[in-house]
Image (tube, rainbow, N blue to C red; front, side, top):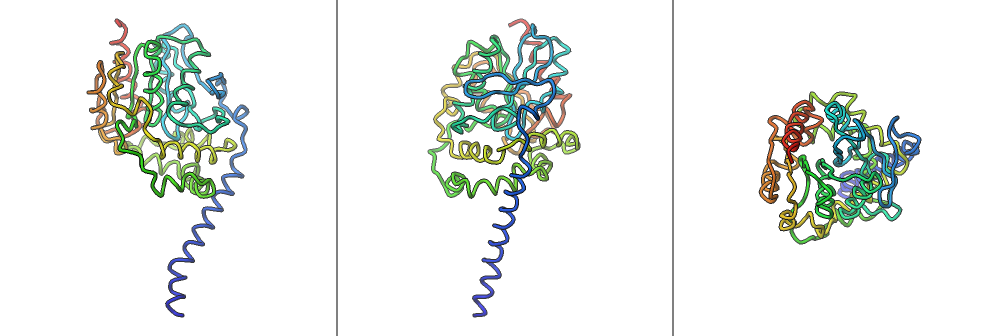
Length: 328
């Protein structure tokens, strides 16, 4: 009997406590996520049709300028690019940053499709709506998958590309759905965990520190930018569908196959943080070798989010590439 009581104390009680904590986090997320995207969207932004969603975009610079489109990574959205957009707008570029769902204020797809192919179609759909061509596409981290997929789908539409610490999973091993992948498919399991972690604004700063090297750049104002869309209704549920697609990606997209990179003949700048612990610099070097016309630019002392950690260094790297493009 004593052994039974010890077992209960060591195993059952912590499990009950964990369930209670996760359940509480789920309830808090539900009460927090009350904002309507269109009402809460930042001033000056607008929504445009992008395939199957209403996509939020933010713009800087003259509409007649060379178009540069910015695509964010996991948990990020268009406002994280604004310092770079303001900088390039002064040089006459038409800068456009989009919210790739489920992040930011873009509407969520009705069929909860967050695979790489559908995300690429949304990027292309936005370009269709704005009637843009000769576009310079800038993709970061997870957003790099959809960026590359869009480049491969319609390469003639793009003048050049910039790939920033992109998370591509090129030539992945045969997919095996493990315990984590199976659990993520169950909303009753995934939603409370996500509510307690990814969509919990109290942990936003902690996550950013795990992804970066220059922690001094993570001011309260910068962290608040990442936190702002977390109050949009349905965010935790949408993150769950996205995470399922991300973790259980079968690796069938063109951007997952190394031979397909030879089709990208446009100039590509590969910008990488030297101390990136999420996508190591070796992945950037491999990517550079796969591309016909690529140059690798490694930024010292910077981790996974260069445009946040040292915006000045990132802007100079990007501007240098744009200057070289002027004769192309």
